[in-house]
Image 1 (cartoon, rainbow, N blue to C red):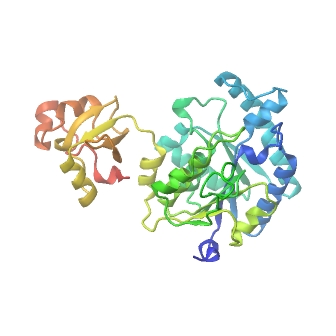
Image 2 (image 1 turned 180 degrees about the vertical axis):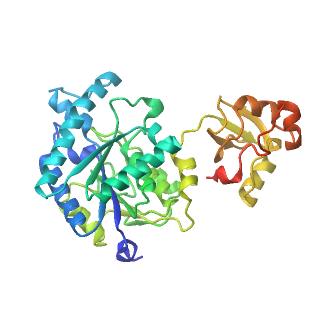
Image 3 (image 1 turned 135 degrees about the horizontal axis):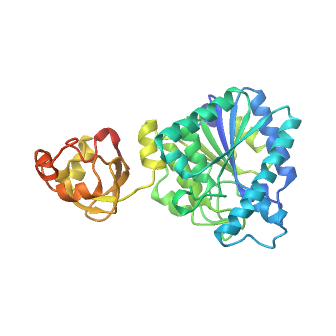
Length: 375
């Protein structure tokens, strides 16, 4: 596999920068030396014609430093306060260093709700693309000051994958505090070897990632692998590298053998189906019989009420639900045409019986194949 061949046509790049990269070795605040080096590399890319979008962590870490706290708060209100104070400090540093390179920055703060609503999703896309057209560097972070569990992405690895898909990027670079994916945890196993290329993210690869977490970050290697897996379904490659190494971004773009490169799947999902599968949060579950499952997977058919055995959760028409089998395993996701109350009444029934049971019929399908994604 020739890295240079994979990366030679890269034009639009999303770079995710983790808290472990941005903070000082003693975790006492933001590391100006690292930020200056990253802005230098990004500016070089920008001036060579690449469109570059940053997804940057570090707001809470910066806030902890500004507030002179000894450790990161545990409760949500204090975390959100630290994020509010730290975010302005973080964006101020980026603005200062990019200004030295003759570039402007734009701050974008998002919650999961901003991307799960289709209209706001498209608005966010148009805003970012417009910013890029002005030759400005978008710097994106989760809006920690208002985000709670229901509207959180969970970590910026997930957010960076969503952004890369949103704007149809050519590459995601994850700047981490490790060199890439290892065969085992290098902190525990001295014989662990760096894996240079992953052609397909299998269960074995996910298990290999473990569940390591840094002192300042939210996610570990697992969330990075999940981000790469999601993007692979969009036909977008991902590279995980050590973000503290000088010139590392430039090395990736040149096709040098650094970090771990995750290759994209050949059969990629369209933008809408990716949005359904990986951006929306499931509002409930629909248990289907084996016959319906086989037809959905093998023949690409729609899900009819006759194939539904059970409904879990409360949802309305248009919500995304998980399709599970008799073993309680999720195998598909889709947008339902009927609410949970309606489906409870018509489950197991033929489509011709819907109107008689409900008093009306919108469509024959519980989930139309155009709004259904097999996982």
